[in-house]
Image 1 (tube, rainbow, N blue to C red):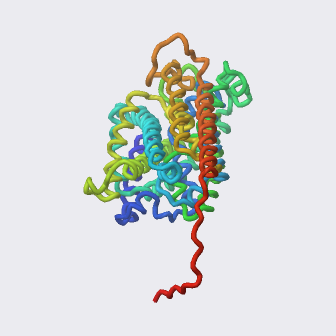
Image 2 (image 1 turned 45 degrees about the vertical axis):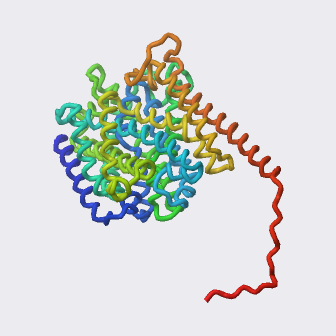
Image 3 (image 1 turned 90 degrees about the vertical axis):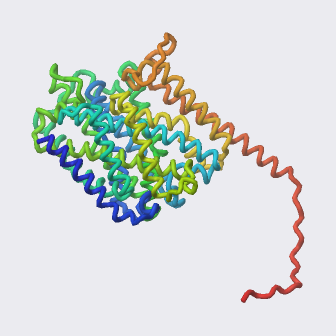
Length: 496
């Protein structure tokens, strides 16, 4: 029955995506931002579907089952914080600019250099995020259907490409609506089953009341707070969030939708951490290497609930990957490619640019087969590079291209340096890129997230302030040129 739910969900989403192509009408404006016609409920659904994916559900559940409730809850709580900050301070300003992508903002604010830098960093980091969802989809198909992991990743990526290339943002709208209905019913049903059926019990040290997970570094406190921090601030410069906020009908709609998404993320996803902790105790010695949520859905959870949850998880990941492909292709075309020389329209180029982005996601997914961690790593890198320039340029007069470049290079350099030297990534073995050494140990895991962000902040403020003072001195030292007074005795004939 679960295999039937998976096959039916994939088929339905592909059909919905293909049907949405009628709304595009050959216009890139409709393809990229749905004509900026989306109402509050639709934008809220799109925002939640962007982050309530397999990284924030399957991955968070794995972290909760292995490291404790707060390790899993930190992920959806961090996402909720980002939506709260977006609604209170960012969404209206972003929508008022009527942009298509985040690099467009950096172009307006920092010039061509800022645009290129933002494009390279966001496309690269979101290739990692897309890979995290492909990992979960591969595990899902392998666990429930028996399709080999690598075959499943290639298959689902081709399906997502098919409907996203024709439907664009409207494809995300159609599939997102289906997702939220199924997810709300399935996740609530799963939570009620656990608490009213087997009941909530947690292994020692892993429960909701075991607050040493938030206070003691030995219990993972630094990693948990780093997760919340990276997602809370890094998601502010998420390219798909930026694009979906820009699709809102009005600036006020963008703000309201962000606040609704914050509340919805907490209500739907935080309880899953408790379900995972209780599930770890319920499975006991029978726990396997498969994601803990999948193990519960296989034999413990009633079949109707399991079918709904699996369908929701599948739809969430497909929708997120679709949104990332759409956002990254718009950036590549708008920033890098010259559509005139390619003899392609912007719409055609946006569609074909999705193919190499999808290929990068597949390669990373085949290299790192762990969910959740890739989500945090994506926004961790953005916190070390783009978050500070984006926020400060949006709300202060500290705008300097030189400060942007230097702070991004140094902040990212610090983070990547510790990344390749630290044997773990947020508590999980570093299998992506690790250089064995005896200097950097697992004790720095988590702390390096804050360190890299602090470097970015200090450097940006220092350089931008120095540039601002230099500009002020230059302006005041330049002698004023007297403008000739207008000759008011000459009558200027009126235009006819």
